[in-house]
Figure 1 (cartoon, rainbow, N blue to C red):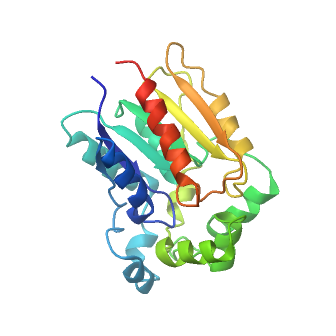
Figure 2: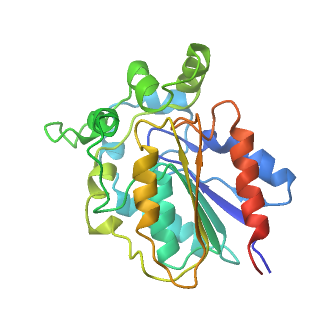
Length: 259
């Protein structure tokens, strides 16, 4: 029997609030939805901004986030569907290969170890937290101008501002740094549960070409591995106007899975 439980995994600079509309839509379609916060991210956006620079946030690692979600999943009565965005997409890929998902959807997924691009938009958009000269003891913040470029580049100004004010919080520099290590290594040939990877054609921070490179490395014999690129979508694909089309595509894909 197909799983009807979904665990949504948010990405960097975000809280679970970014999934609220998706949770409501999938819940209305009969899914049991969870959207847990990363460790320490279970506060309001205003509180998290006021805490900056938070030493606990500065110490947060990708390993800690993975352990956190592993514990949540192990506490469930069955393997859930995992759905992650951005760094949450990479976390989804890692947890999938660990056998913790009945199916997985990685949206604008951050690249695993060894998957890279020299595309200018990727380098520019990621520099704020990837700068090797910045102290990892000081969390990164995202200015509105940087958010405009990295997340919401082609959206109307009012939509950019509303998204920034509603969702954006400081971030640990250790999480993206660890994504370059063996912690984020993917065994692309290991068979496993179905995986759908989604990209937005206008994404600056995780370009569609990088998402496709990530997908193209999979060669899982006998395992479902699919890819879909949505034209005109930015990195804020899960929240920008028209997000319903993306969510409904995912729901239809899940509905076609065997079992």
